[in-house]
Image (cartoon, rainbow, N blue to C red):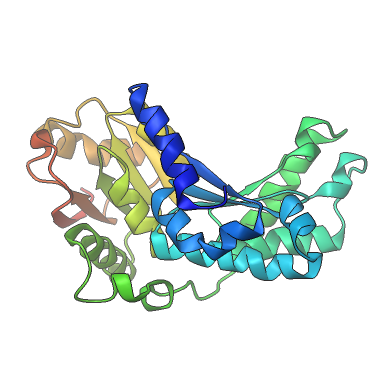
Length: 284
């Protein structure tokens, strides 16, 4: 990808085929960096292709370019993937180097939604060990108590107070309420996944549970930071869904009786309205 027109051309082709498959912009060429915010606006996600960027630019520039791409994704509220040479030495060795461990950890701290292995698992000798090692590093870093970015530090002028859409205000309110009340989950009823992405953008310390009747939506949300997708056929029956919710969350091991849960939805649910409601419940 070099400019937004590349993404729009592909999206038009997909639409002509009657599909809504998301398009991930692979950022691997320097011209794309000149249009990175515009690309982030039209793409469904960004990928930092570090290997190719290292060829295009001096390798010492790649860490800064990585941060620039992640920041653009944050401004646009889109997921971002870091790829290439994450645990390269594990293609032939069973253990990662300390430098690689630090690189993976830094990807988490930079704010990436996903870290991706490639040659390590496609052709390496230790694919299972690679995945296990990366998961362990990510869990260790995320378990470490550090100050997550605040809405003010992530947002740019297009999303500052006074310019927010209703769903964005609800997303921020849900995060702040969950933090204040020490809620065990933020539960969002979503048909498209949009509100789950908006909530994820603000990096709450609370797990985000996205309930949708569409399996394709919950699968796609696996790409989004902090979101667990749950399919539910009772989605369009608000009364039934509200009654089932406590049991569902308990079965998932997310809550216990007495825990607080923050909920968002578009009311009325069966009319497929955009998110316009926030509700706080205590699990019976």
